[in-house]
Amino acid sequence: MPLPSDLEIFEVLKNVVDPEIHLDIVNLGLVYGFDKNEETGHVNVRMTLTSPACPFGPEIQRQAHGLIANLPEVKSVHVEIVFSPPWDPRTMASDEAKDVLGIF
Image: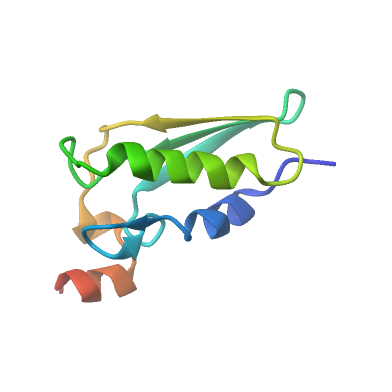
């Protein structure tokens, strides 16, 4: 069986909510992408935080890891926190998130 699709991974990551902003990391635009290895069952997630000093970063990373690790056929997961490109909610967040954040 193949690894979950990118869409399936995005859907499960919508369950990870930034505790300060109260929006999920997908709608905030914090998830940049995935690398998957079908042979080994490994999934590498590239994501960022709202700021490098985000106090909830380790918890967000832990939640994302746990949700993906529980998906079928996933044998290992690495959630990589990156800061390039820097997160910009004006261009990366969903319209729903922009409304909540007051970005017009």
